[in-house]
Length: 158
Image (cartoon, rainbow, N blue to C red):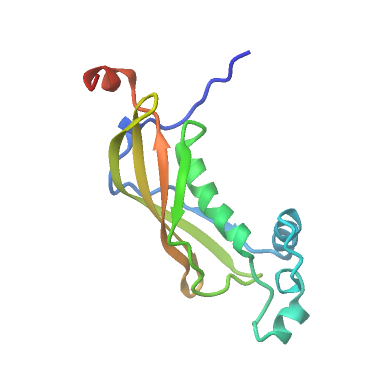
């Protein structure tokens, strides 16, 4: 049984294209499940009282959850044909508190073809950031994605 990958091809990419945003309401349930799933048992991510005792206004999303939100944005856009090669510039500027809504936004900034071991591969760089009620909370950074190049394009460059 073979698996057919579906999703975006390099030829479909347009520099300047805005990726469909991901909107994540940061509920207690979501933060507790995220912290538990990535084994981050620091109480600042699931206990309001403890988070406040550290000076934070409320419990807040952990790094793994935030980074996975960048991956979700990119994977929703490229489908199973894309492969994330790098994430750069991921830095937390401020907390993403429970009770707020986080938006994950991206824009295609560059695209190019590189020669891979099996032939040409499309390389796409996407500027990504998370935003909360007070602006950018994480990033901006870059996610670099590899996408397949159509056969007709491969034959032209052979």
